[in-house]
Length: 185
Image (cartoon, rainbow, N blue to C red; front, side, top):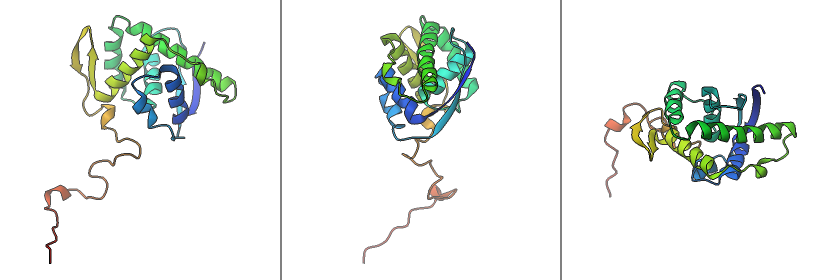
């Protein structure tokens, strides 16, 4: 099996993830419910837990293609050292890859309703999303580790929901000026 290029909307990916997991990452994926932006993702061949498989899995569950590869490498090393990390990376990715590949083969017919991941894989996806978003690695059998700060996904402005600080309505240095106050007449 070779790599496959897919082009799906953020909405289609979110629907698949909701059908497959029904997990606690629901609020993250709900943001994409009306987003018809196309993402182009290269899906490497399934069959293991390689770094490229980890990148593709992360792109799918985060519904983002612009990921910092250096951070991804650090996360990959941590997840591979988990007791079931390699297994979960491989099985989550294989299930989602099969679903997306079938959708492409069937000309866009909805196949997402038939995707269902086991509890361990659902937990792992939530664990992966949380780690990318918060930037802190938590695992019950390992010490908590701060992995990233500014690269954490939570610092990326949510699409259309919150403005980027100091880029809208204010110029550089505006925070240093006292606010204009009107005196009552």
